[in-house]
Every structure is written in structure tokens, then in C-alpha cells.
Length: 380
Image (cartoon, rainbow, N blue to C red; front, side):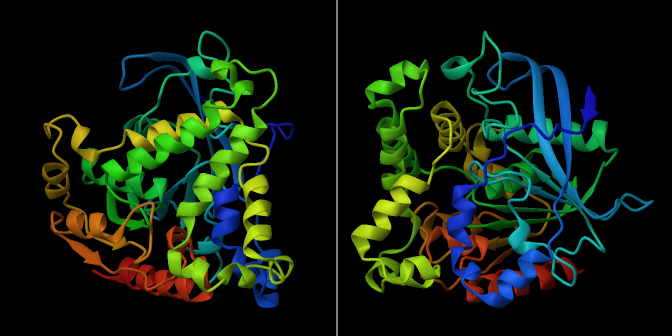
């Protein structure tokens, strides 16, 4: 096991999903001024030698990239974990972090971890043979949680968390922490994400995977040039599910930034289709979709494949904030799961912004999340 700082030569690609999720805020001069004051996370790299995955495959060297804000106090009791959402990097929760905010680096030690497959942590694109490209094994949410547990305990000397706060695939990880390590965190917060990928989500993701693999340039994953057409096609599929039907009907894309204000529907969708996953690696995109598809807390050893049984085992209080209009993680699925959790505060986000509402896509969404989060973290 080693901890080191990543070199400045590592390629950095911003999360397209996060950019879309907060695009409305960037139209605000006040937000732009606040964003300019934000500090970058302190970067780190954690390496695990001979990391055995849930599937039994052993990665000779597994790397977890992470970033931190703030300082770990002497008692080591001010740590909050923020596990990444799809393809996000360690600045993927900047929309929720700042002095005087619910997540305040002056008071808390914030750890933002990056999922396997994002191109910086161990991924198809950066792992040597025999696991390069399409041969990289599927890593589960539980694999990611286990790797981060080792980072916390073996790397940072943290054996307890004030909270795990996760959006989307980060919410999937938050629920898994509550099941796999029931007393590791005092509180669990999940926004716009469920404890498993329900059947409709599996089908949606399969369609997006096939949009990539149908491109002849994909070549079974052994491409020499990225299958750009396939990547853009999966971006078009992704975009159709991102926002609510009413969001599209009301042409709310025109509020996202000045450039979009004059765009027609066709112009906006064309621009987003080309930009959404621009610069991403196709095998990395697929790997994280497979991770998402396969997730179910019921698959945790001891629960016999039962999502209900796993959720009923949770002892930590849960703040569950689904988006009322999420098409990725529908409200009905979240409501069903909430019935199985003993200590749950269930508060759907009243928004037309669909899935990105869970990342504070509009000022109202952000205010709602932050208000609920602040009260939840302060409660006894």
C-alpha cells in the first residue's frame, strides 16, 4: 500500500454530468463570483497491491484517486466522505462545499473519492495488460466501497466518519456503506440515487452501452481511435433521460447559460450530444455503466439477494433526497426503498430539473438540499 500525490501530467477531464447539473447556476454573476473563490481540493493517490474484486479477479495494482478539503482534527472525528458520481473527479461536489456552507472545509475534513473507471482511478484506459481496455473486469459498488475503506483506514487513519454524502452513483455507494459498514458513519445522505439499480435502469443503461458498441470503430473495445460517433450517440440517449419531460416542454435549457438562451430544441440537443461525453474513453464509460447496472445492496453477503433485507439492517439515520422528476432513479423506487429503512428522513426535491436536481441544478434545488443537509447534520 502506498499513498502519493498524482503528477501534474495526469490528464484532467471535467465531469460532463456535473457541468450539466449545475449549468443553471453559472448563468448567475453571484455564483460565478463565488466559484472564483473556491479552493481546489488537495489531490492524493492511494494504491492497493493485489486488490481482490468481488468477482474473484485480482488487480495487481488498484489505484484510487481522491481529493480533500479542510484539515483532519486531532480526534479524527470531523471527516465526511463524498463518493463520486458517474465519471466525476474529486472536485465533483464543489457545488455543495464552501465556507459557511453545510459542508464547510473550515469545520470538516471532506474526502472526495473517484470511482474505478473514470480514467484517473484504475480504469480500462490506464491499466496495463492483461486488464487493459475491454479486458478490465467489472468493478462493483462494493469493490469501490472496499477500496475507499482501505484508503480511509490504512491510508488516512480514519476509522469513523461523521457522514457519507452521495449524489447519483455516489448515493449508491452511500447506501452500500450503511449496509456493509453499519457503524462506520454517523449519518448517510443520498440525493438522486437509490440502493440498487432497478430493472428499468438496467435496460436504459444497456441501450446506452449498445449505442457505443454499435459504432464499427469500437472494434470490440480494442479501438485505436475513440468511437466518437458511438460516444455521441450514447450522449443523445443519456440526454433524453437527464431532465424531466416538463423541463423540455418549458424550454428550461434556455436558462442554463447565455449561449443556450437563443437556441432551439434541435440546436441545444445537437450541441449537448456532441459535448456531453466529449474527451471520454469508451471503455471507461461502459465500465462505469456496468458498475451502475449491477448494483444492489441485497447482493451484500448475508442478505440472500434481498434489497429489503439489506435496507432493514441499516442502523444509521438516512437523509433520502430523491428528485421528484428523476428518470434515472424514479421517485417510486426511492419511496419503496424508504419504507424499508428504520431511521429515514424522506424528502423529495420539488424540481422540474430531473436527475440533476440532486446536484443542485437550480438555485431552488441547491437551497432545498443544503437546508435539509444542514439540519440533518446538526440533529442529534
